[in-house]
Length: 203
Image 1: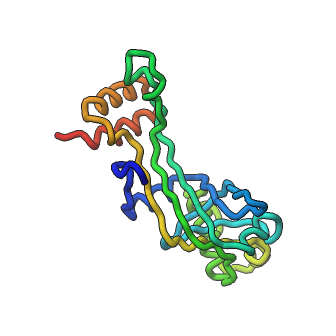
Image 2: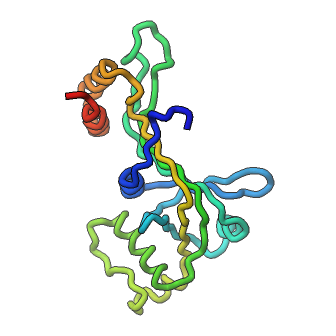
Image 3: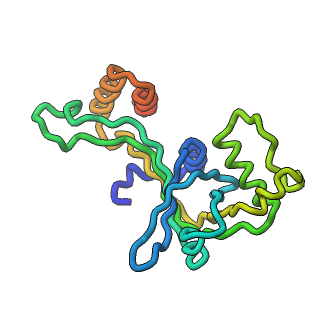
């Protein structure tokens, strides 16, 4: 990463982004010289990434032929307009604040039924945290058909890199100005972004 101040490889950051990010992007060999990026729902469990899909089709064929993948998770924070930072009309200070994780790994089809059920249950717990469903269990006969018929895929994370672009490259005076603008604009996301930045101020 060119700007080292944005680099953050704290495992807690990986867990936070994987938990809060609702859509990830799986990059795989698309064939014919072009990569392919696929948006997927997913869950992380024990440092692995699980998602489900059909046991047929182009994505399945590509993964079967070459399981080396990239995977991206992004948590977007506030967009900040250029005129918050400059009075000369320059567009350059406009930016998007965000936290992202870039993963390199090996994707494979999960064959073990216990692991399949566990992966599917982790996805349910993420996207339906209120529960109100029967836990997915390999020994529950009501899930026999579902576990057999769906493909569950596991990405073994070989390496990953976290990027936190939250204005930390700016001097504190500029960050305080940014927080004031965010508080004034006042959306829920702006308040969350302002809280994140304000936590970096010297007391």
